[in-house]
Image (cartoon, rainbow, N blue to C red; front, side):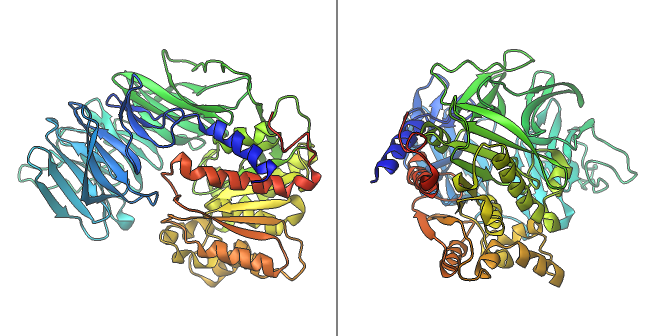
Length: 603
């Protein structure tokens, strides 16, 4: 191991010692404790229930809290099975024939049985924990079934193509309405709170969905309106400039965690009326983000983190600003928000984290996403403090197509406008260079999944802006998205409707098509293509071809496989070598222009 890599390795290992707690559910927390490499189930007092081999995705404690249903997977490929944990004995019993992939478990009120949608086999399964008996019913063809808490027996959400999602009370059969895209439903007093792609609806659940003969009330159409157009909702709330991230019901209020103007905010609603809106957390040195909220045993808690602030749980004592305790040690650096004007006049935002007291230009890793309405916020990721500790800067770019500024922002980088996302990244890179924060020979672009498409597209189209670029698990061939297991779902994001015009648009947008058209001797930034050994979403083929195309054109390109890592649900141990490889590549790509005093030795 080189001296540079050894220094980065040590810094990364220090950052990885910080845990990642989850929100309490039924008195239990699924998370990774400080100093541990895998997730486990812990009690609120910090004692461990179980920390099994494999991967725990989600937990569902029984009402009596004696058992915990879990989604457990042997590898990081996201395909799980049902497990039952004895909360007192700390043992795990697996049911390998009940195959799950992010499916919700509903317990019976007496904790003796549960229902779960085994989506991998398209079955609705009832498991009796007393007798071990299983009953399974096949799901409707081409339909998606989800279960949510609510009523006496839970709620049933059935999605079927263009008809949207119909929500039904399982106990009474009452139809609560239909929504084009329903995300989640939860109890709200005697009614139900529906979180959908357009906002929030509160609807009554009075058990009046069937007539005396048991006929379903089919008169209701989208969002709970009857055939005459009467709105049955108790209230509705929508803000086109805010993206809902999470929702919790606390006392008399619905508390919404949202992203607006590139920041996380808490919004209090009373009967659908906004009564308060605050930034979810603040810090003098780090741009903090609230990533999750939840109520357990009447207490509202928030998960808060920042680029240099490890994840922590905070309790909201009162309705107002959440105060984050000051760090016990000297911070590694500071995070500053910069607003940069795009070439079309739109203001773009980038958060830059850098060592304290340093002046640019610095070696800088610029990360991006910019798609599917997903916000790209400044979060804690061990490579950030590791890179900053060694003298570098780390930046998080917010691009059109993401979810940082509402519906118009999202549509501005979607479909036929997807080229705008790549142009935004180029504009942010130029802005950072013009501000003296970095230089082209000190700048490395990095993106994972869709973010890798954006980073690669920018680096190949604008090689004068950066010294290198990294993609991780990226579908780089936009002309053949269907070759990926989930690729058909991504076509609309890139504007692929199958027409000749859309194919021409994709060819101009596709990083792989651009790379394969490069002439020999073209200017090409150094490239690191990372594939994940257990990825069930993105095939490795595109990255292999990208490496080959750039090498044919005379560029420096390498391939690296992260064995044991998948597209999600990874343990920190599996990500250490991946993070180290990316940091080492970034340091190498900027080494010729980096002095020993700036990069290459720990502080």
